[in-house]
Figure 1 (tube, helix red, strand yellow):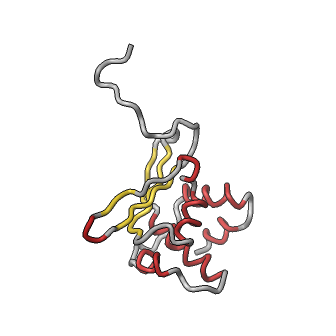
Figure 2 (cartoon, rainbow, N blue to C red):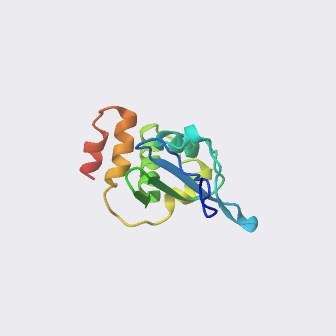
Figure 3 (cartoon, rainbow, N blue to C red):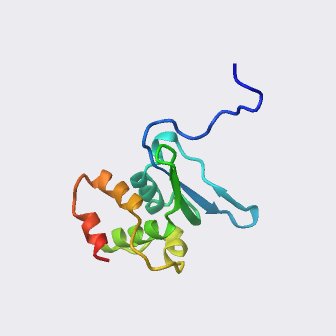
Length: 134
């Protein structure tokens, strides 16, 4: 039997799953980590949701993987990827994420965890090599 200090975990228990969560700013009513379905916390879905206006005013994206024991603010990497995709599609950055994409951030190459998420989606394309040259 479990002790009285046990609480159920909200962390997914799938092995080696990286979860991406978006913090949204709702102005006067405050900021919150947006609710999302368990199956839609992957990087590609998060990027698609940002591009399609699912978030009002995103201010941060974090990623974590409990199996690997890490967490990281990936806002800069996600903003760079959003701008890159809009450039490739010859379209403007959607108004709902312009502030997020415009926020000055440190200039650094994308993290290995972020590139791994893109590689798993694009299944071996040259995308990560392109980023390695940035």
